[in-house]
Amino acid sequence: MAGFLDRAKEQAQQALSQGKEKVEDVQAQRTGNDLLKKLGAAYYAEQRGSGSPQDVQQALAALEQHIAQHGDGFLRS
Image 1 (spheres, rainbow, N blue to C red):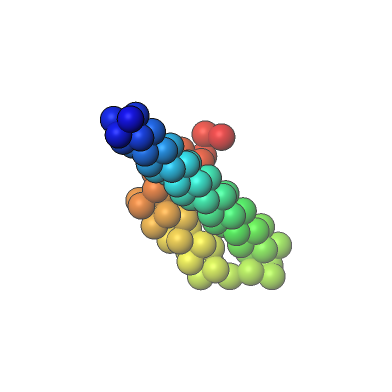
Image 2: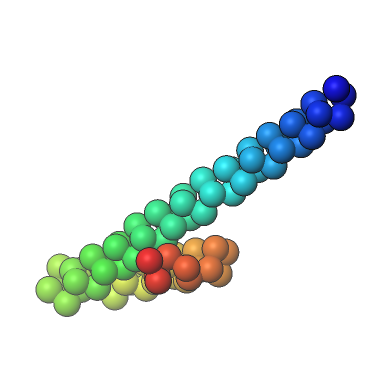
């Protein structure tokens, strides 16, 4: 009986770990999409004359930092 409970506990822990990884992946993808949107908005504002090149550079730097930490998988979705 103890062997069964140990296996069930191990499987539950694995499922929990996989669930946490999936949540982290989804959160990283959402953050990447938000940063990409901010970059687009900053670039658009710059082109329309109401934004600055510094805003575009800041948005680009934030996006590049996110890509360095989490990869660029969100760009393909």
